[in-house]
Length: 257
Image (cartoon, rainbow, N blue to C red; front, side, top):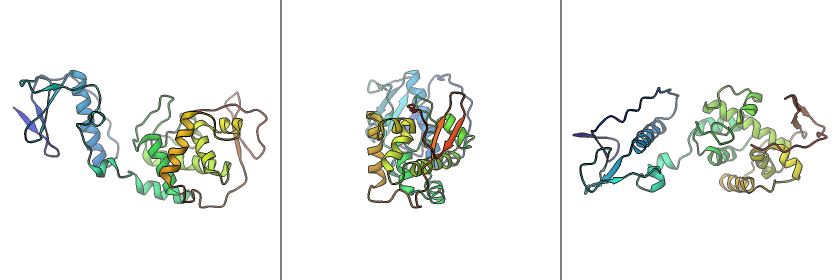
């Protein structure tokens, strides 16, 4: 026997327990995203235990770890979306999340919300729990030291992360007035790298990043609404002291994420 999920055409067969027990910490997130993440967790656990999938004549997908029909096929280690058999609803897959927080925070700091949305889409694909290989966290991928300097206590809190990320982006837009690509390059590779090369660093990742964000934000729209202010420089000493000045530093060290 088994049970069919009322929210989608999936039927989970009963079988031996997979033996996974995990503590769960819940955060306030949109219901659609929570359901999607919960389903993805179930599928990933089933895949890890060695599971099988079969689509019947009615289009219903059956998933089990104890196949009793030769039509079942083993599920690969890839996700359902990557391998093509799981299709996300358009409202979940394509619509920007946290739109209200993005708009309110961006307008408060005088930054185009479309630019902020594009940065989040490229940085984390709107995943508030994203962590990069270098340790950047959350929607706008803040490094722990940057988050600390911006007063962000929980980088996985969407509102705090957006607030810190937009403030940092606003600072960079003022740091390189009138040059949005340089500000984006600094967001990705660090101000030290931009200053060292006096332009967008010759890193393939950074150049692709700038291009993607510019395309997604709409290059015809102004990225900054407020008037540019005096150029500000920021650098970190060997002892960890963070310094802000209108005088450029005498030494330039690359500071990539």
